[in-house]
Structure formats: C-alpha cells, structure tokens
Length: 143
Image (cartoon, rainbow, N blue to C red; front, top):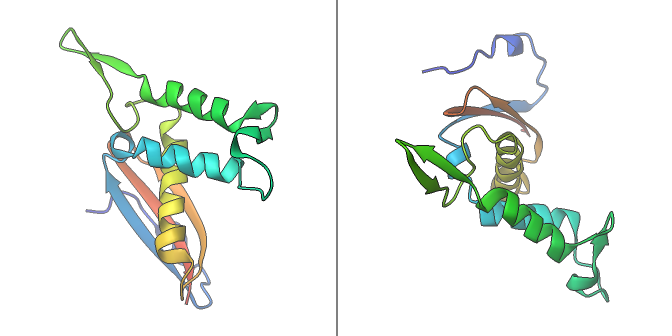
C-alpha cells in the first residue's frame, strides 16, 4: 500500500542518485529514547580532548543538566486510558510535539551509521509525517 504519493519525483533528474522510501508503522511510540538522547547529546557536546565531559557547556548548559532535562521531558510522560493512569515506558507519547523531531534524529542517525558512510553516501533524508501511526522517510543516495 502506498501511504504517500511521490508524483512530484516523476520528472526529477537524478544523475546517478537513487530515491529510497521507508514506511514505518508506529514509529513515534517505538523510538528508543535512551539511544536517541545519546545521539542528541553526542551531537551537541562532542568529545574534546583535554576537556572533561562534565565541564562541557553549550549555551550555558552543561552536558549533564541537558541530559537531565531531556530525560525529564521524554521519560516522565503519563496518559489516561479507560480512566486509568499509565506511564509511557519507552518511545514518544502520541501527539508529543517532540516526536517528529526525535524520529528524524533517530532515523537520520540510523541511516547515516548503517548505510550512509559506506560505498553509497547518503545525501539527504527527509521526514514526512503522515499521522501518528504511520511515517514516511525519503533518502537520496549516490550511485
């Protein structure tokens, strides 16, 4: 089943590049939060020789404080179902404004690490959200 029309690509000039699409079902609720938090932290606070990790500061915030803030925002989600309270164990809460951003971060990292740094360099990855249950990614690879 095609969940998204790619008609806009019909006349694209690819020049030895390939479009690859990925459909992911229930992505937001299956995002591995700890791994995604590590990806974000490592991107914002790269290891610097001679500087202790605890002493790294970006925009006035240490690595440790930023990690605690992400943990609080992402891991302390509760919701009500059938008049009972539940805590979200892993993944993003449905409807969370952070879910598309975290999905994009995680899938970009996954594709770049697993596919993009080898023989076929990954040029661009775009996240297109269909709804909270099904997501679509488009990647462009060199031939």
